[in-house]
Amino acid sequence: MARTEQLRLDELSPRAAAAAVRKRFAATELRFFVRSSPAKLLAVGLLLLGLCVAAGAVTATAVTDRQHALDVLLDESEIDANSAQRLYTSLSVADASAGTAFISGGLEPKPVRDRYNQALGEAAAELVTQSNRSGDDADSYLRTGIATGLPVYSGLVETARANNRSELPVGAAYLSEASNLMQATLLPMAAELQAHRAAAITSTQRSHVRPPWPAIVLPLLVVAALLAAQWFLFRHWRRVLNPGLLLATTTMVALLSWTVVAGVFSAVATTHSRDDGSVPTAALTQSRILAQQARTAETLKLVRRDAGTEYDRTYDAAITRLSSILSGYADDRPGAAQVRTANDALGRWRAAHQRMNEALSKGDFIGAGAVATGPGTNDAAAQVDALDRALADGIGDARDTLRDNTSQAARALDLLGPGALVLSTAAAVFVAAGLWPRLREYR
Image (cartoon, rainbow, N blue to C red; front, side):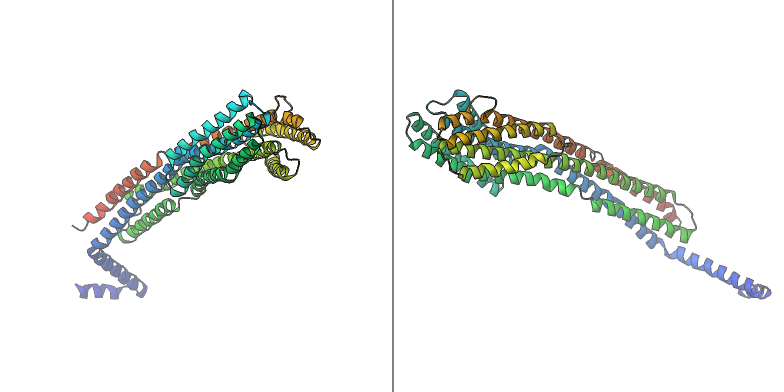
């Protein structure tokens, strides 16, 4: 047989003989490969199956974690941050109201007293809300400090109130001590608590706008491995297309595309919730705090009948920062209309404060008190209330924007988690279906 083939080769031209030898060698090599490749093919199949399953599991886990973080932000972190903001504001309002009641002299007006009591009640309610939602040590210390300090504060205020009714000058000292406790201890604790809550929101938003790289890279790696496997089969079995692997590749491309599109939509919504929700809320919350700080300084100046500049410096510093925030607030942000209302009220308040200082400089404490606490629409009390209401309404609008966009970001991922598991399982089935006919050839 070999001699006959040699005679046939001798009859051919050198070029034709070389081509025949190469063809015969390739056929021999192919037969050898086919006889020795079941383990290789099985290894390729197991690798593809493992990659498909891993890609689905990683994607589903990443999506579930992100969605859970957004739901926690929506249902807990944002509510906690608003509660902490309300706690700080309530404490500030109580302190300013206590001073306003003291300036009135004797038996204070019922609306002023009611405002003080309401502010203390709201502060206590927010403390309960905070206690129900957080258990970390730092925040526990802050809540405990506020809860234990609040009765001491209210006791000092009541002592000051009793002395004021009796027209005893020591009442001013008690009220100053109460306000010092509030300004130096309770409010800083409330501010730290609010900062922790706001930081939780910012941290979640910052991490969510980053791409979920494992959920993108691994499916991309699976697609590359499937394409390489199809090239491997083409090289050694001379099959142009493998239907199973082609379907598996299409399935993984669909998963990758879904992950990218849903992730981009969710990240964009989160960005909007940050830029149009968290950032304006923080600015308006800071504005509301500054307004209360200025009001407290204003009332304490009257309580102490201080014609100096100490309280004016505190007032001016708070008002300057407040004016800067309000004037720099963008017109396209939520609550812009309320900010314009607040800015107008701030201008009228500053004018009233100037009239109060002019009266104080003349020794007219009764006239100064009337400007600061009187019922007139141009008096300071009315403008402070208008300013605070406008800022509170603006915070409400910004919160709605934050919550709406956060909800959209979470809902964009609703089906992706289970969908990733379904698609990856389908891809694994397609891989097995595509390689099974090749494995049967070894029987």
